[in-house]
Amino acid sequence: MRIMLLIIAFMSVPAIAAELDDVESLKKEIDVNLVLGASKQEVEAFLAKTSWGYTYDRFQNRFQAKPADGTAECKGRNFLLWLLYDCGIQIFINFDKSGSYSGYSVEQVYTGL
Image 1 (cartoon, rainbow, N blue to C red):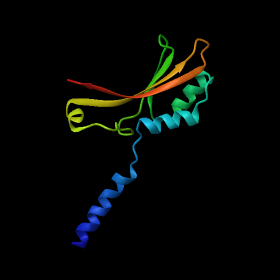
Image 2: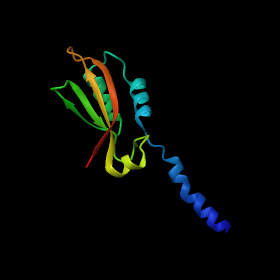
Image 3: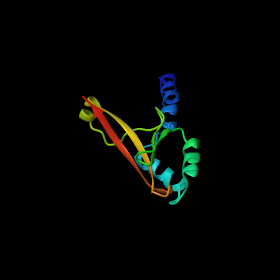
Image 4: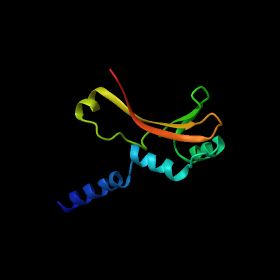
């Protein structure tokens, strides 16, 4: 019986240690690392340090980013949403007309049947 409890305890440690990002933690990371008015090069340097996949959309004048698979999770989904829809987190880092960082949005997005 003790051996079984030890095995369960050791197997549960990695699951507890792996802290996944969510919308709120991603917002905090952006708030800490970017200041309004930063240049595109500064924002791109920040993005390069993250594990996010990103591209620049010149038509919308913003970076679009997505956390790497397995590093972030959606929160607040009920069973029906989990069953019928795939959820992801999308990040937009916006620039004004002069090319300076002007804000961001981080959203849970759903795709499905």
